[in-house]
Amino acid sequence: MFNKYLIFSFVFLFSFVNTTFAHTHIESSSPQSGEVLTEALEEITLTYEGKIEQSSFFTLQNAAGETVPVDNITVSENVLSGSLPEPIENGEYLINWNIIGADGHLIEGEVPFTVDVPVTETTTENAEDETVDQEVKDENNITTTVESETTNEDAAVDEPSENTSSSYLVPTLIGLLILIVAGSFFFIAKRKQ
Image 1 (cartoon, rainbow, N blue to C red):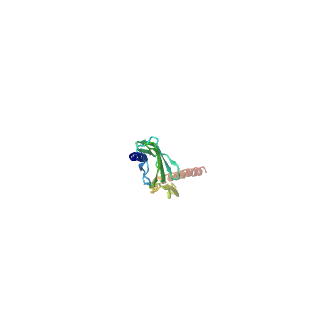
Image 2: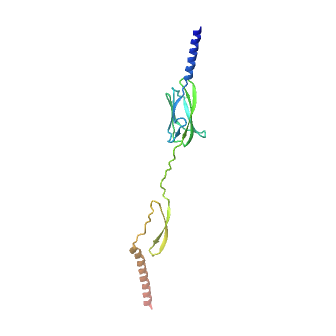
Image 3: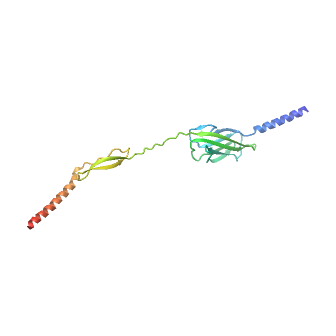
């Protein structure tokens, strides 16, 4: 009689222990629980101790509790994974996972992590416009001040060309023409008297 109870106790004990240890728990994750990521996260991977059912899933939430989109959540044997369509901002995040183990039990958990990717300031060389005063002489030798815009990259100001022979030729010809016309009128007027 004692042997029956002993055998019954062992059968009960082993069946209870077997049921207890049959639950599928998370083995590893990427990102890991509590990890601080310093590079952009592209994929989330959760690996479990045993095979999980296809209906298993996870969600990603930011510190405000808002759901962050995750694409292509797939189950392959004991791995649950999904990809991020775009980089996520710096801050604290929480992966909430829900799986159905091979034994049919629903198990859930969470993986907290932080994103702290250094912000690289993209410095494009913006050329700031500067106003430069420049003195320019026109054909009549009148000096005027002209404002011109230059950039930091092109700080050199083009000097006006010093071609004085062509700049004085036109006014000289106009002056001679005026003298000839005036002289002709004066000569004709004196002749009529």
